[in-house]
Image (cartoon, rainbow, N blue to C red; front, side, top):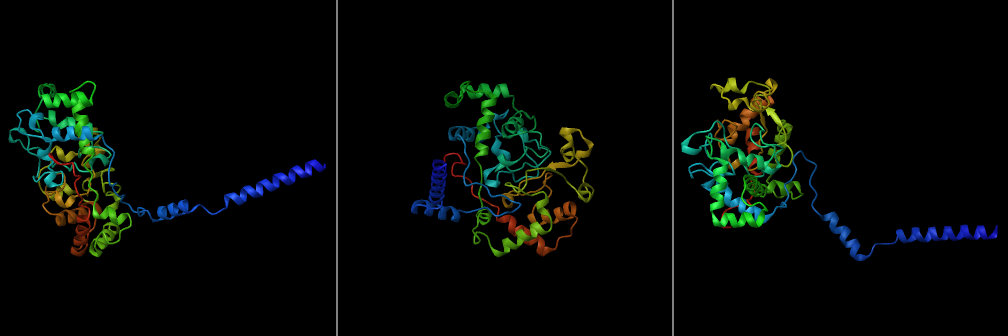
Length: 341
């Protein structure tokens, strides 16, 4: 009995010592690290998520993709490149109502920005491509866009000694359609543009002006964040153009096939006029606006969105405030974005 009591006392003593050790103050280095962790920027709980300062990519593939993105060799007559409709000087979009393709042909729809497009849940207005690589393949073979044949494009690239050597270094099977679109997609994935507004979300209250803060408050109050949300301030869902009022009747021009939106892919009548909600990042740089390129200013676009999507007659003060906020979403291109950089 005596031995049992002694053993129990020893166990209790060890337990007390163990607890005492766990509660002992942390070493100075650990304490300092804990303080620094508390100081680290933390994203605000908001409907918009900040972009990262960088993204993990294979830079060798990015540089190959950059060359291909700017190369007219991918088009049927050597006159059109990806950058033709997705200009880095125009926020990754185009300064035209609709795209201009091979032979001067005009396409049916306005090209959306390629910047930050890796964060879209699908690609194209109608969502017909599941990712950036699938999207990169489409325009090359489209007869009114780049008007090329992929087999011929691959043969041309193979004949180019520089391309052939680079592909051989990066891909076991060298130049193929899949590897070409993979490299372009890797380049496009790298085109992220953190903005002043991202700094604000991470805790820097001085990153945007009071007018921009009020504009953001209005943006939320009137309901814009029902669709324009997430890391790309859009690009997370399909939504009907003319949700609460018939936009196409109000537009006053005949319907086009492109106006059918998601229906062209799904053939579901319930998805007529549904489009992928566009990103609002860098929107200041990408007029004209909407899928049909019908609006030349942000002010008129915000007004139309209020009428047809929200059922609101936004005041001039509300419109100007929202536009002020939208301009805070303009970011910086990464240093490697342009050829020669």
